[in-house]
Amino acid sequence: MERLQKIIAQSGYCSRRKAEQLINDGHVKVNGQIVTTMGIKASYEDEISIDDNILNIKEDKVYYLLNKPRGIITSTTDDKKRKTVVDLIDEEKRIYPVGRLDYDTTGALILTNDGSLTNLLIHPKNNIEKVYIAKIKGLPTKEDIKKLCNGVIIDGIKTSKAKAKIRKLDKKNNVSIIELIIHEGKNHQVKKMFEAIGYEVIKLRRERFAFLDVKNLKSGEYRKLSIKEVKQLYSLVNKEKR
Ligand code: URA
Image (tube, rainbow, N blue to C red; front, side):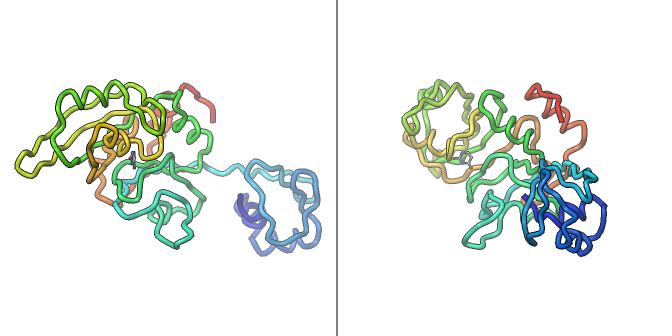
């Protein structure tokens, strides 16, 4: 949702100020109804007309890949006024994150204003692969790793099949680095999966989301996705509609 005068101005019809005047003077309809209340919000899906001429308000889609730093919330706003992932990106359009990474989790996060792609990417039926690297307290056994792969019970539900492997066992410091590949996105899933087998995650990074990794992005850096990458994401979810 966006202020009506902003949507009108973005369509290129006139300036925001002129749009306010047009609203005030009763020239503007939203879905066939004249609107004169200032400050009212509309969506890009609404039909907006001026003197019965329908505006083309389709917003260009933008897609970003961010290497999310620690200490930033994955949200569009925060009631405690903390910085959000959206604040890190220099983009006028209203964008939002695809799924969620915890405040202290780092790594690959897509942000976009493409709601249909977002819904497809986060829907479990589409099986999007997410690769996490977890630093955990303790030294898991092969049996523990097998449990992660076969599924563990979190919040009363068994997680689906996953892939996991030990990247490093640091016996001296009693910590390990584990790679865990999952296709779901339950709340705090990785931390809860480790908790279910008796280990605490002390650091978590998402190394890859689908085929997108952040190896070339420093913490807090981001880049636009290429058209090819966007198409590739659409083909992963088998819906070439846009
Ligand atoms: N799983 C978690 O526990 N935290 C995240 O941020 C992402 C996946």
